Image 1 (cartoon, rainbow, N blue to C red):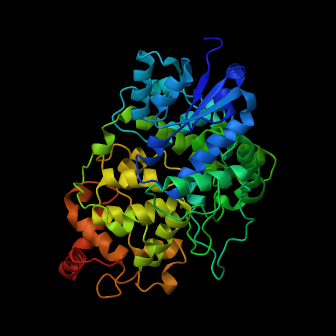
Image 2 (spheres, rainbow, N blue to C red):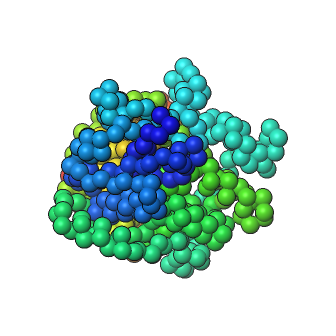
Image 3 (tube, helix red, strand yellow):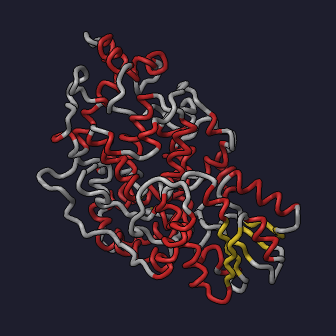
Length: 492
């Protein structure tokens, strides 16, 4: 094993994977044409993956061999030497690697080094639990890694500052008053990637565009530093807000380098905590960011493995509507509702939107309209530049669509137009009125909320967190008309 080369998948491209005890090894990188064409990916997602692989080859120098082949198996056979590999990040890839090990192409499979908590430690934590709550996991993560702690107590005597991180967007301004996020400079590698993708003529979605996200460890460090130094301070206050003229707001934009493995989560967490300790960032913003990384992201990763490969088949709300073509094609121009148009246009133009647009606009719309959770999961995984295979099942099936029957989340997450009006600047110039549920200008989210509540009234009435919605619905004098209107709605 001492001289066995190390094979890196495209989401394992950081020093946590190839450094340390493996720093002496040769490295194998593979561009597999079949993997690029297997699904209908966003054009910018393919660009990021290829750019990351080719930059890794350049940065690793003589250590690295980059092979281009039709499949991974073809590349390994062409390479002609058994390799080491770390556990991949999807069920399908893990089955594939296990088969390669039986065939002798893989010598050993090592534990995943790109997350804070090892998989075996999560299984010990999960034990015999039948209900999972992120807050329990998050507090144990804080204790385990001694993050924002004072002895055995959390800094500030509170674990969670979510209530302080829900401000509406500032009025009378189109953008947050915050420095722009880090933007990488494209180079000759990016130019060649773009040329090669044009030549491949793949069936993709979304617009091509300048590379917006870090794909190397060096770029990731710069992106992290710019966020910590200039943007973390305002991150918490407006974490849940949406602004039509400010797609990035104060978000970190670190999900891509994290999911490519070029930035380790503990590096991001430690940088944020240090900013707070140095008096350069407020506690609420720091805790909110750390909760995203050390809490939610790690939680989603581990539950992906814990729930197993059949989790995406869950459909407890019996949602069977196929994704509409305008959605699948990212045809934002066919959408009238300002919030939905803006979120879909963000995916079209950048392959990215922030978490509230994902959950409370795109996810909420899909939940109200009963889109199939398996198709929706696939869409998020292919249309988003940070949507690797492990990321989306628990986020979509569990959190967004409540398709697992409450295994992950305590209630379905959806709302009427009032929430969107409060948390965004979208509604002022929208053709739909968030206060109206009936008529040509009735907000599809407001009306859709009541249609969803009616459709699942028995389930919602049993849930302490949602039973009030059922009571409110039953007092609506125009409910039948709203239901008839929404059953025939084709325009959003």
